Length: 159
Image 1 (cartoon, one colour):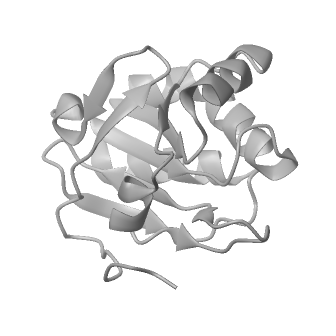
Image 2 (cartoon, one colour):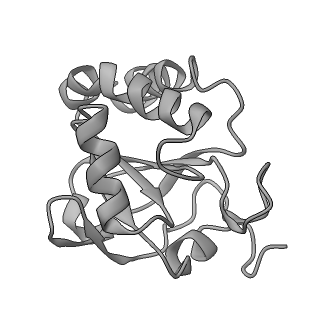
């Protein structure tokens, strides 16, 4: 069950203040002027979430060339993020939301395929002014999803 109304494209993205794998605290405003690809995932080092992170990582330079920053977010603690990032040589920033406050604000909190409560596998594309321009809810095909997001950015944002 969601604790906040479902976000929609065209609305302002909720702000956040979360610690990242660079050991700094990040807010939505830190990405002003860039397209932010905020992908929420269930848990570090689980099979499907790992595939998604690796596929985003393979395209990280293309996202950068398109003016986009890719950031992962889950309710894992920062030390788990560090291990996950190092193990899979992930280049993107991972944000830790152990209280699920940001995950709830994005309407992505609930019971996914695991029995534990946490993030759904959702992706938000947010423009440089903080407006949500695309939402992908409960992503299933994690092999193809990052390329789909990149194509959206190239076709819609880079005009």
